[in-house]
Length: 320
Length: 273
Image (cartoon, rainbow over all chains, first blue to last red; front, side):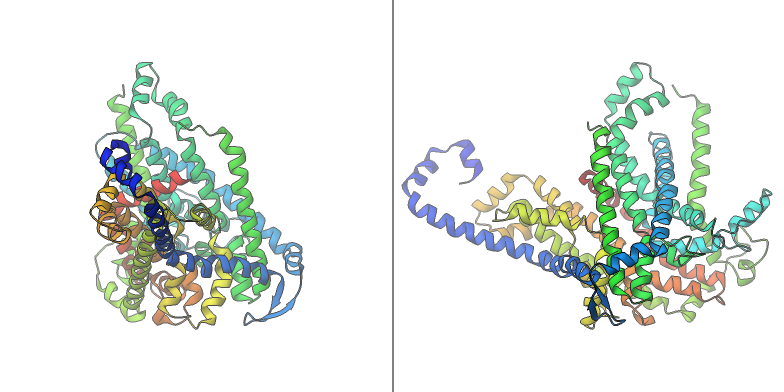
């Protein structure tokens, strides 16, 4: 029975249904079964791919993490929780954790603040804003591969543009990628630049989602631009800010490309973030067991972070 | 009201910020057209002294950048098509069909978005290797042919299509398959375009998976190829940048023509969060 007919309540259609209700339920059942089959058919490609490349690997990760493997990836022996113990006991895990948290601290607040300021400054109808919006969105299409290559040259200790320009204003050259004190900061600068496009686009569309009338009434009440931004834009933007925070932190935990290209985890493990050490364990040292254990720890950490953020931050977030 | 003075200040501030953001990209294109002497000069030239386009042909001689770009376009294109097919079908089932276990399967799709890709990386590598798929196009594409994010994006769009449309089509004797192919898909071009750009770009830019499953230069994608270029210390800077410029050019063109779609896709992602 179509909804349209129901709503209009055509008397003719009603009568037909009453008259043939027996046959109707039987054919309805067949029809429903056919729709079931068809729906499963529509879902089959996605479900099959998820099963092979997502669900099975999840179980396989757990299995691998409880075993030791030979370099070809064959299971050698059941080792229980030894892989996890080894990961926690080796200094590398703590170091990786520390580096990753520092990386989050360097990139997430700064990156969001920069994007928020730019989004607020370009949120108006002045001439030429389109060009600025395009420029600030631009890094979103650049890949981590090519961005890292460009920055590797900018960071070059003697011939790099950054040190040259610093020299111009009388600052001594900075050992960007070669000093353990600077390497993570350098990678963070590059990462902030690379993520600016994404953060800017999301925060801009968040700002555009705030209805004009609210600004109008604030203006009538005599609120200046700064007060309006603090008292109106910020609270209404909080769901978007919340989303960007979650995505940025998870993204920082998953960083790999820029580290592999710029520093390879060095110098002295000062940039050896989580995913890079998983990569090294599994694909350089060919220890798939401990690699999987690390990957599962990463999974747990990301899950925990997401849950904490939802529990604590969402309470303070203002939904319109 | 704002005075002209603050407006000027705003423009100055924005121009400085834009210059800072744009500089690495400009630098790439400047270096790409410099002569070897210009590129390695000290003090470095900020703006090229002369324009030398021969770098772009020369870089083809030292690395098979043509096959890098060809591979990447093929891989990104195949993945894009595959994702459009699998995601639109699944999205149609969720949005327009009634079936047993819909809620369970739907929450399973939600769950897949919580799994960081790195957790599945090691087993997937072992799977792909055991099938002999290293250094093949199927190894590069098949693991990414289904997308939970894309399914959501399209489902949201399909749900917005008016119910009356389907009722009318049904009265005309149109079944689900025909309704899907000849009505839903054509009407959903904006959403499909968003997903297409999104998935093409993320495949074009992917780094870690191609690094794992390709070993031969013939199968490399641009992102790996370009970072290999940089590890050859002897390579002249202008050639590295000529290669990099060639690699980022398609992305930039995509941004010029598809910024609106891209923004829409990301905004949809943000709403979901």
